Length: 350
Image (spheres, one colour):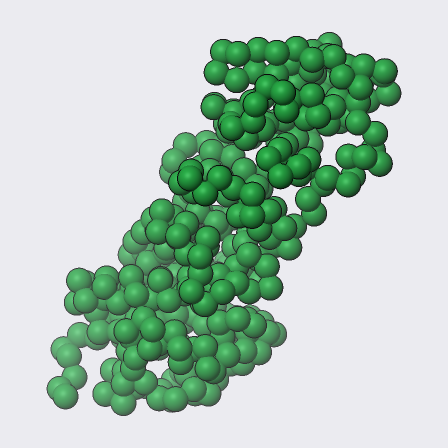
């Protein structure tokens, strides 16, 4: 097949060092680059949303990915996939990783969307910053191959940082890129990438780490699976359901009753954004946290939750504390005995 007059590539740009280096390697071969950042709503650098970093919708939207595009002089498009991602994280075909991370399903979704964009943009192939053996769930040989086939990018998905260690792609066979100028990195050490960055004169990049997805956090995973187990199956899952799992101390009091308690003023402020349509509990005459309950909780279930709020208030050593419970204009004031630390510890989700 004749070589196109201009080779174009679409890259999955996270803003991290690996995808930055992958883009730079191709730019040095004269390839025209476009980038895409898929915003799932579960990354630290995703848009500011209720319960995250506050601020408006633009907030710190994939700041690092956009910065990479700015530094290397190519456009990075932001694509919000958060609605579709909800279906993936609640029922992943390929299962979860060590925690609540559906990494294989997530990667396949992104690559499928990249394939569609590649065709729309007239690009010739897709590239990523993946490194063989770097991550346990998605970056081993069988899984890398699986991702290619499941995404429909078989032969047209290039991993510039590990290309010399994996089978030659159609992109290389057709001479669109020079395989000799690609790399053969492998494993979890980032020393080769840091050294390459130095050679390329790249000095500004995020400290290499294990990714930004908070679904990989063990504490978050416990709360995530608790939510899936006890949620009302008749109610649609929303992004807010999962974002609130990031905030506060979570206690499961029984099958129907879970309470989220702010641990400091900052978390109280974040929880305020989730307050509409939920029971909100606060201490009346002493300093204390804001706590939220699911909107389906009945009035008769409030006393036990109120005891938790009293336990984390400045009135924890009193014989009783008045707790105000509010929801949609309804107000109840309950005088309750604070729960003991020993009792409350049995209910904490960790």
